[in-house]
Image 1 (cartoon, rainbow, N blue to C red):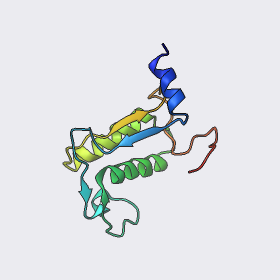
Image 2: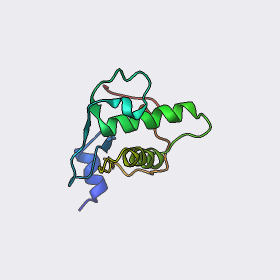
Image 3: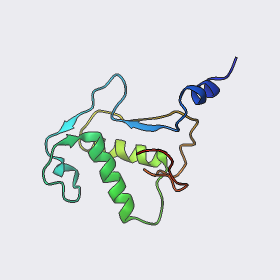
Image 4: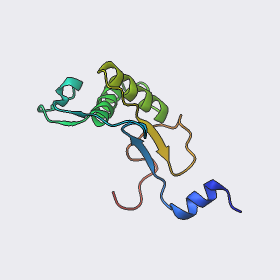
Length: 117
């Protein structure tokens, strides 16, 4: 019998990493005005609280070029941003492959990208 990791590689050929807006037992909040997250040029648009928290985290990281965020750093910073805004949802990280959470977080990996976006 093959291991769970081997089965995942067989049935899910892609390397998928996902940050969900909350735990399964929670509901992700919408924001009527993302300007409350102090994003560059939000134009007062509505959106998801988790998405706004991720954008704020990534914009802040872009401004501080000294250290690259890991997957763990990104997730913890997003949770902190949401908590500061009194949101109770807790974003979660999932992966189709074993993942070292200390790996540098990138939307597009440095080693290139194959397939469609």
